[in-house]
Amino acid sequence: MEHTYQYAWVIPLLPLPVIMSMGFGLFLIPTATKNLRRIWAFPSILRKVCFDL
Image (cartoon, rainbow, N blue to C red; front, side, top):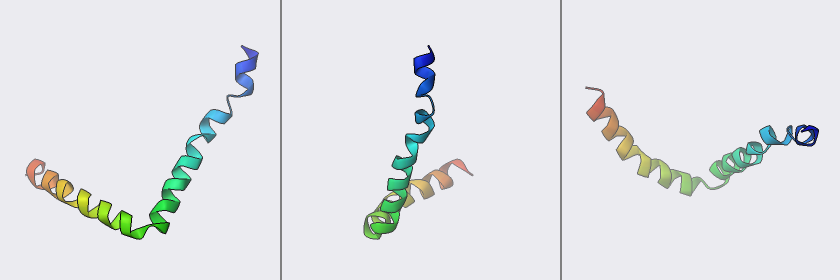
């Protein structure tokens, strides 16, 4: 059991590089994020109109 506790500190650090790479991708590839925002805008507005009456 002691062996597993030696590496328990790694688990919270694993998502950090993934989140950082996503953030850098949003800054470095603005055309892709622009397209994603356009794609997501329609369902978002539709959901707001339909369910917030």
